[in-house]
Image (cartoon, rainbow, N blue to C red; front, side, top):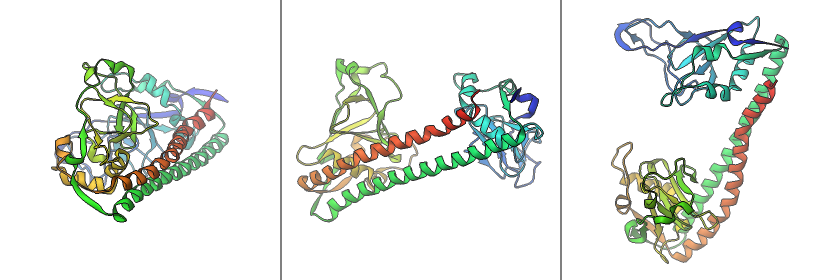
Length: 368
């Protein structure tokens, strides 16, 4: 096995920034990829630019995201010649030296290298030399193809396992929704205003803030917060067992959390809405699952005013209504919902392990 710098075995094409203009230079159907390399932003029919694009990727090229939050992500180019923006560089292998699929697998394994070389606090970026100086191990071409084929099969198995785990999570969510629905449909209920059966927690934790972890609300529920307390940590709100809280800017996409009996008590941002069910009237675990169910989503949507990032504070949520079964019925449903938690936790753990497999598989394939 030999090694070579990438510049010696591949051509590297830097993307080009193009401004919309009034001159029809390219015909319809010519794609323009602006990054990231996972094709999250693609404009396939742009045809009015003030200058002719000079940077194109071709089928078989490997695209590397070189600017922005997705720096280091790679993907194969689409199956047609496509203009590329300056967030991307295309790596075109010399097929006499490097198999294209092998090159893609190798570059996919270099995320740590790319992120380590990226500079810029606001918009991290890679230079052309960062790619050119990358050292690639060179097996004989037949061996490269064998390695690429094996890695493709292994990564396909990982994808299948991930899909199976995600299907399990969806099934658990449907089961939770079913428990909530049954508690409403099979028993008598009364309609209440949410403001009449919920209590908002407004007071901050005070000087004891340093004794607790900071918690956040995500679309998956409870999670450690990404940021430490700000300038006024004493204003952070207690998030103890039996507490429901949500991000008022992201409730429309499901950023809602619940602190269960076996969760570590914590604090959460003073910008979050923190609430609990009235004792003897609302079981907080039952309400949390109601709020995350289609019934809760329908209620939230009915209260929204159409803004993409509006703030739904408690006074707005309080305007909503809920069909509430008896507290005893809620408690029975709540006990069944609690039984789902260890099952979900096991699947989430499994999914995290699966998500780490591609990095391990690729690293082992190219370790020296």
